Image (cartoon, rainbow, N blue to C red; front, side):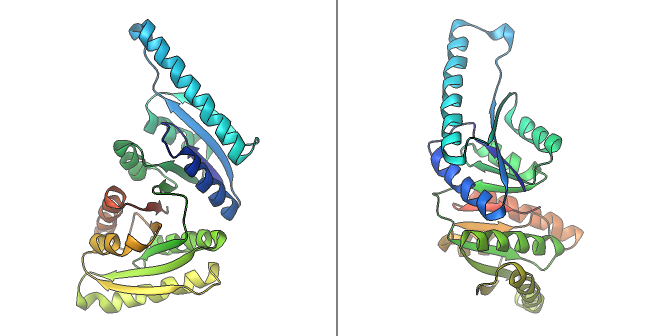
Length: 253
């Protein structure tokens, strides 16, 4: 398990982010690479002010990397790249074959773009270091069962409580939602040996997920669902959850 941790731009909760990453890496048996991306200032725009700005950013970067070494260990690879942040992150994932991306929600535009375009499982960290309760969403599709397996494994490794959620859009869909919940429970039992709760709800999927998530620290779901139409729907659901949830979100790909 190769984990790419985006530490720049720097947020006030960088120590919390590093603490979460350390626990996740330990739970999954993963190695971490810390990446800092800075927008380069084109040569023709250089001025005494821009040079000083670049120096101050360099100092901030060194401080962050020092903290990375303190909290994650001296063997963590630390690297810096210049350019447009989202493009640089996606390029790094493609070149080095990472399995997971972790970053803080400190830039709304970057959060949405990385959530949408990251080709690997992505953890968007929000709101503290506690990940003691997982809400794991399923629709019975292979993609969502993959999310159940990954999130269940992570929850077990962290010693977190886990709840499976299946949503029926209308009453007539309850039987399908119940079947999806039972399939997910079978998969969950393979990776999460402790007891877990199952929930069945009715309503608009994205609204139900957001409402149910209020008592959890992390929402796990797959960006794609059952049919071609449902894949589009699920994409809309996952992006809506990313944009509106106040809790950490785990998108499993």
